[in-house]
Image (cartoon, rainbow, N blue to C red; front, side):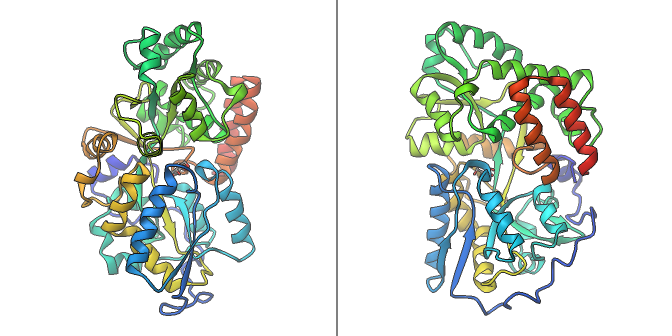
Length: 428
Ligand code: GAL
């Protein structure tokens, strides 16, 4: 399950993977059968903000054009990375009041739902739509338990990107963005002396997003992968060394006046108060789309330090929950999510590349054209994101959140490392 996507693709491993037996998630007994519940569909996501909302709107428009009779209820809850949506969704699932389809990340975040019997087996849609032929088999592995498939991927996002303001760098006499975190720290001193914030930051999930990418850059792709499968000891010298680097990076951030979400953190970069920000490629949609900045002129983006040639991936998917009230309409929504037209409407605006291998490449411009090429380059190493649900289950992720909240205040590396190690053992 935690093998790299590229390795899985290279080996041509079949999608079926045995992890933990699924509970009775494929039972349709509580659901309206196909043909019923076709007049409306309630879709739950966290895409309300500038940038990502546009992608969702484009896919909804395509859905409506094809399914005129179905009322679309957009139940999106604001808050980057699902910071508010996930708690609200948990309450609804607990209360037996699921939306007709909800957003989940491919990987262990989804697999928790599968094991808990919250989502229905939709293998039949994969057969009907012939999706096995168009989605990378390595990605499907993250959606599958016991050979049954439980959600439809709309995209591939990249977490490990360093955005920068070219003018701020130029004014500070910095020729190019840093290739390593150590080089970043040297530049950060220069930027500080020039009265600039070296790196802007937002709420807790963005701090975790930065953490995963400092760990990736410091440890390299293979050891980064081993952080999530128990092979690399969090209390070892190499991991605590990387955590020390993270602590230093944070000391050059504006964490004491952290932005409320990822867009306002990027605004500091746009305004020239900050030089850098580490964020996923949804930021490209915000900068190039919402803010109309020109790639390589108004803003720049490179792999985060130490992660050139590595794609730290995540994938947004949509599910069919057990108990969905409008199953037939939800199936139509899932067909939209998996369709070429749906993905090509959504992804250029969302700032992601399509999950489908046969999407229309000419629609992906600027940064996204580079991203499509890099993802498809066989020498690119692919690893999974912590902050976006790929590599750690929800229980461990929640423990890491708590420990990280303390760590960014007390800076106690040994305590943080020991706590993450202990909670891995307790939640695996
Ligand atoms: C991620 C999600 C992306 C984007 C981002 C910021 O978790 O996968 O699609 O929405 O959060 O909100």
